[in-house]
Length: 295
Image (spheres, rainbow, N blue to C red):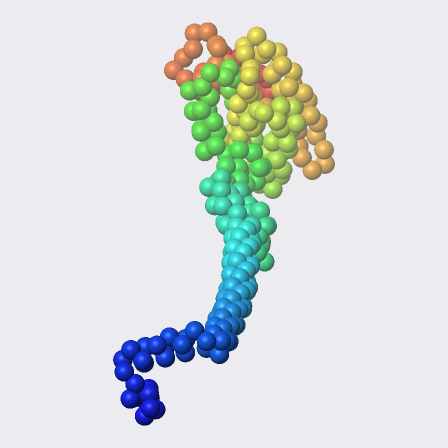
């Protein structure tokens, strides 16, 4: 700061005294007060502006944080919904399908439309295969003409009962003079006789018994839950069948049956129950036919 010439001529002491007068007079004090008030006002304004900016920043941050929380909640809800939908429409049906395959059952028609279509197609193929297998098994187990069980089925059943604990009776049956009737009336009539014999035997015996055709005019019946003390029931059944077969009609001539029976609880059993029943059958055929003999 430059001093006037007159002040420059003052001594150091005089300068100090004049300076002290300047800082202690009213004008200086007034100006200093004015300056202090203006500085204080500026500071207050600066603080207010800073505070306002901080509040706006806090408001913006709070809004952004709230929006972020809402977005995260919506995302979590969407993910949970997707998981539930996927589980219901895809995972659960596939679990049931796997269980059905393991248990050999048809698929439940559930889940997404594509899976339902798949299940319907599978069920259709499954039922067709099941029906085909049933027909194949039936053809393999039954005699094509009479629909009685065939010899193969008879041998399996007999083996099963021979090795089991269930009491049973083995009944061997021959149609008497069948060859003569067949030659005289023709094979078509002979076939009708065999069908008639099969029908009467199935009618006379229970549904749990096994009626089998084991040869040309040879039949066998495995009668389950049967003991030797009940042999009279077999006699009654065979007698009733022979009475019906003995009635001649215009299409089928009269025939009769020779029957041999052996029980699983028989005394003095021979080599096998089949051979014992065959011995009883042979006795009937050698002694007039049209009857029933027990081993």
